[in-house]
Length: 169
Image (cartoon, rainbow, N blue to C red; front, side):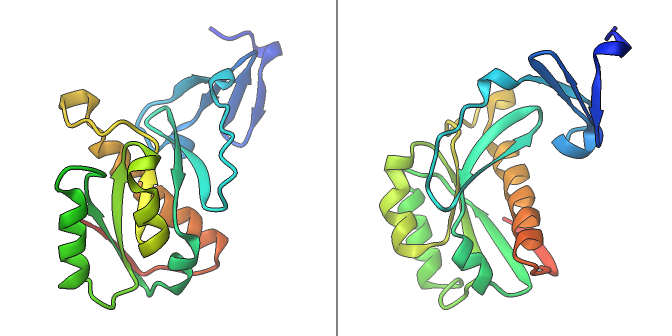
């Protein structure tokens, strides 16, 4: 039970001491969560960098903003791995059904060093700073999907560009 005199309530966010409680509208989850605000120390000064909260978890990302400015009303997100077969599959998709399409983005996680050159070259990767794990509850799939939808919403608002549809494969 939180002492009512120590709460600072602002727009569905409750801050108590060093902890910050996020409401359902902020996290995208079906239950409220509490995060330690001390753990959020992002120092990424890349112009495409940002952070979101998904499932009570802070996620740092990079997204090619200029590519989203050029995108049409339908945005397509394609799940992909940063390493392994991921690069060759992305190349194949770029050369076939995504050829000359400016609204297809690949959702990747893992080490920035693994995809930084491809990110700068193609400007079609949405990268989240999460370990590329596909093991039950630790799987990165939920983070990739939620991050993608959240990032598209953020960019739609920031760029004043209403996207009609968002698809994720």
